[in-house]
Image 1 (cartoon, helix red, strand yellow):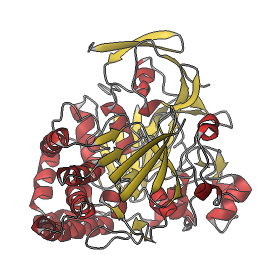
Image 2: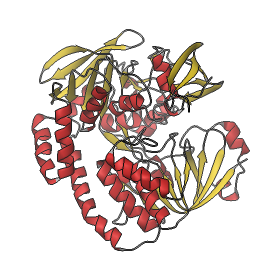
Image 3: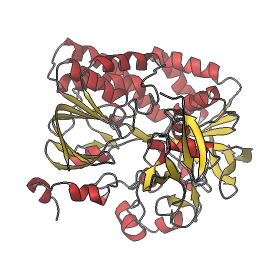
Length: 430
Length: 82
């Protein structure tokens, strides 16, 4: 049986941007639904905050959420878009048909992982990835973690892991010192970020922060990482570790927006001042419109929530100025932590690039496009559907995703078989 | 609500705090590798947020479930490398 629901405003993603949008639309009296593929709300930055929030902004927004009347569909992923105004979702038990008048995409971002020898060893994780695991109940106390990659997330992760009892000897930031210093100086224009940076600096006293430094290889026994080879200004050395938490910035999750036909500009969903995408009645908010962090996500979520609810009042205008500042911050972030060319040389010939299908680097170098590589090597054709290797090959070879096809996530055949095929959706099958 | 949940990972009983994901329970028994890749390599969690599918395991007889997105339940039977 297919489960059918109808909403005035449907929001995809229950991170800060989605929750802010949901609160605003629900408070305006609209019938609101929020879908998230995780079992609880909060997204990544507020992972584990639902129920017992500790971060000040999370306390405020979860309180607003508790009072707002809306329907939350956790553990549910969007798999298709059979026709205008309808999304198909799967909650592991069944398929759902979700109808909407307005749709707000708050699909967030994921980490970019770059292949280097040894990166597939268990214990080599994302930076945010390891933080998410610890927030999900994993014990890290007494374990030695090298944090590497790029971006301010590395600092937040290192501080979080230390609070959880990890030993963090150093943070390896690939960006050059000059650029990072300029970014830090630029924080003067963003007082809230400056306060956050000062707090992180205090929390991370005693942890080496090495700019111009990146992991060249990870080593260990068969089952787990034991050390990382770091490279810095012509010097390489080994650091022992139990975990290498490594992420090279964030990549917007544009698969669903692409499936809906939203215009994508430089890897981000293009939106106007009212957070409208190029598709009628579809809005996009938060990291999917550009990596800008929490404040940016909350502002955009509120703008879209109010706009989708039809509220054209002063509240909307009041938010446009802070958004300009948040956007400027996003641009500075992008410039400061741009990935350096040397990182393209990291994979060896036999380094796995596509982890789902075990496709090696040397199998890919002979192809000129993502499509050609997919057809000949099965790169990007496994369960993650290119979400990991697609972001890597985009950087390594400059390949772009040309199309997205349903189902967006693997779906059990029995769920598909139980769903009634509507005339509109059958016309798409050819 | 009880403070801890007891479940089984590859036949060993393990207790984790309520609200933990299955990935945490697998780590708690000391396993870093969750699955075997198509070429036979051991793999463990990468993204921690349901994107990479590296943490997929068999839970209560259902294969290919992402351990990082499934809350632990009392009596759950988890099998890795399946």
